[in-house]
Length: 472
Image (cartoon, rainbow, N blue to C red; front, side, top):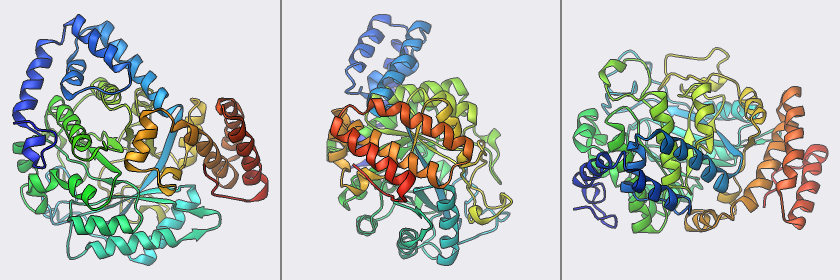
């Protein structure tokens, strides 16, 4: 029986409720009146239920589908403006004891070299990332209690935060590691992490158990209830995601929204971010075994419907996606992207891009500066802002501001200041020139005269005075 407040995985992700929801969506996929009512509700920017959103995803009316895309773009602008947050993944270790059939790190893969970074190697990787201009990392590691214990993760976080090279600093470390205990989540919280990210992979329990035949990750409930334990450990910013293509995308969509509803019902705080990766080629992985892979049109509609259903959440797309695909979904709801990414262990310190330890093939291989220039060319503000984490605007405090559409009062000036830092310290001349014009253009959108006065003064101090790390 579906109960969003329940603390058992099979009750807040109820298979019967999902099957019923998909049937309801099929019955109403051409019901123009109902779809119109759902879209009218969505315009209030307070979100939709998993059942309402599933009707939009199933919709087969061309005019309504166009309206869905337009509304998604409007909602994205309403909450997040034209800012796009930049980050990079940092792979610490590919040792893993799990048997995930879609991941090259699976324990039985004997063709991939196993690598674990030392603290000195992490230091060199972080300096390389700082020298690109990155301020925000997402650390990644396989699950291996011997090679990658929580102590290794905590030591690595401490190392990352300790490194200050030239004007560089990693100001926020987000963490994507395997499901763990409340006590370990408490230790991660005390280490000062940003968002704890864990992809469900698939919400379909039978498929989940087949896709994870061995290792701790085989336990569906342990994995699905991880966000609850993270919240109990004090981490109030969590990031959800599924790997689209493992099971049927409409089932995953409904499950994802039910998980968001559960976090709201049980803890009063929905997901800080939702990621939308798709299955893609990798070592020892045969894509022909995954019959549920989705095409670009379906992917775009998924992004739009998630944005409409969960308007407050940050949405992330990685370099799995091509430049063309990323450009399309930026307009439909994406608010965070990776740039200049290497998905191999130790990849940032290698001049030649290493391929032997990658977790997945990177489609968008442009440098960070090329990505920044591309965003600027589309009138997006590339942002390296981490102010909310560091000013205590997390969890329900962040959500309250975001849902009231007040977060932009902080985010726009913070984005402009971090962009100015990037332009001054790292940008190519062409990028710097375009970025300076963009900053000038967007100053007019800062409506508070006092904030605007302070912002202009700080931009000069960054550009000409060598000062860094201002924040509102």
